Image (cartoon, rainbow, N blue to C red; front, side, top):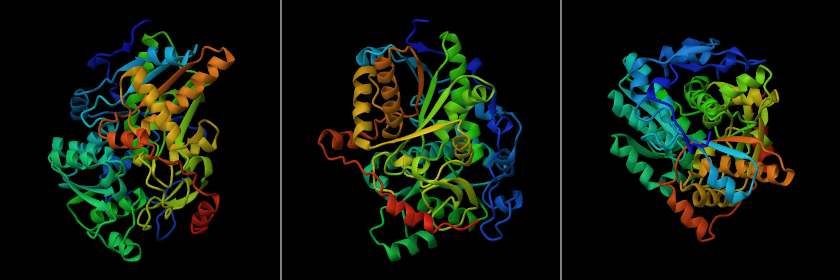
Length: 450
């Protein structure tokens, strides 16, 4: 197929989410209650989540129906386009065939509404009036603010302070849709105040912001918590990306040898790759690559063990690749990837060898972003640019080896609210940061022994 854009109609939208737990060779170990250290059950989670999401979190059912109300809102931007990156192929002089699934067409500019809309729907059905959440770079905060507006929910967002300062327009977008935004750590919660007392200049982390949002939700009966990544139900909702991509690759008469996505908490990677990993589990020859920043290398340098999902220790223990819940990553511009751990599902698949991982410094990532922008005309988000960097490296390897492989990556968001990051890159202000092994060891020593 010679088309640049491979498009589906609204009638081709997936009507069900794909649950990879039905096919995994090994299921993740269960979350543990932070007090008893026993497997956490529905009663332990219902204080901050609606029962429908708790059921999805624990389900091993392969296909889960998408509610019509969710599909109606998905149709504002779904199905998203699949592009053949012909101009990038030409610029790289590669025999590889490169495709990208473009999630930046959503109203929020990223893949995040695939789960924020679903989470807002289930909370509204449960009678919840208010949602507390965190955001790293701001993409999840924007998506949850949009979803709150769609379903008439009040939304409060704890935004990692370094991104709050780096990305003011993300804050404005959230406020445009009616959300209240706090720089985290904040003086609004006990966990935020405690951190500021010991470190007034703390730049924040996703772990800290999660602590604040969970505390907010747990102390108000009208409020639930919503998470933009990591948890099983979030991975589930994002699979609409890969399910559409499989249909589009079929229309293109092609199938990927390599599937690539950036990975912080895992939702981006899961969304594109899980429907393809189902094929891999069933015998298909396929590589799936998770790409993370070298400054926050949870998969490539973390340990596979139980850890808190937040800094203050309010969440259950999750079995995941982690750098330690009090790990403080530097303030890189890919704020959505600055999380200390990985999704338990992604972690288990990586542990079982079904997913590969690699890490890059941010200067090479921005170089790849510039190459892509000048070839394909889309300015990508810094997070997505990690996937672009890996895709370019694989394409160049194809050129060196003379192999015609098919590469598919997830362009999970645009970078039009990240232009300050590009300005810093072009001015030579960005620095690479390889997180020292000694500091990771010190952080891991503080983990609970379970």
